[in-house]
Amino acid sequence: METTTSLGSLLKVLPPVDFCCVYGSSLHPNNNDKSSMEDYILGVSDPQQWHSENLKLNRDHYASWMASVGGAKLITKAADRIGVGVHFNPFVSWNNKMYKYGVVRMDDLVEDILSWKRFYLSGRLQKPVRIIVDNRK
Image (cartoon, rainbow, N blue to C red):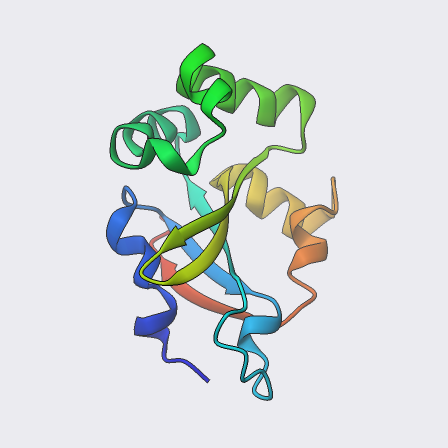
């Protein structure tokens, strides 16, 4: 199994987060498939600001139309109004590995975990989980 340091390596190229966990089959002790995708949930206080910063650093992580047409504002509104409060960037290739990360407002993440309001993130957390960053206030 990978160390917490190696699991959080993608965070080196992303804006700071308040919370980060890796979840899923990549954490299973019997998973020797080094090509398996690492799945992250990133909790942030202001998703629009975070996406704005991330678009400057990692525009290629986003669907080109979403980044070009509406930027951080559209990404955040789509997650909040159409989706379940989280925006996922899948199939991110970095450092010879594939990643998927979802960005969610911290308040929404906590509410979903405690109340299962949407059961979207709390459902994903029924899999193996390793907390990488926890800077909640």
